Length: 118
Image 1 (cartoon, helix red, strand yellow):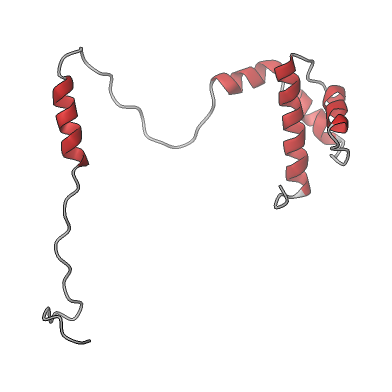
Image 2 (cartoon, rainbow, N blue to C red):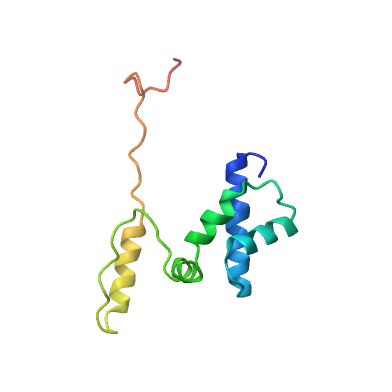
């Protein structure tokens, strides 16, 4: 936490306070966040953070973020599986894919190939 800026520490403290209130079933308001920050010794958090976070992090939005997290990138999922048959065939294909091709022997950088002194 020492490597974080003051703003980052304030944001973490405020968001953790909002999550604690959510987890406890309490009202997520700027007053409640401020009270929790004060109780945990985070008295130097800028006053606007509890206001902003309480307006954005409602119980419904926190629930939505927990239930359906957003992730970036990545490809689409694979196709759905067929029936229950053919399991052995799939395993054999996976084993073939997992085999690593051996690299050809290294060639001497200078083309000599005789293993002499460089």
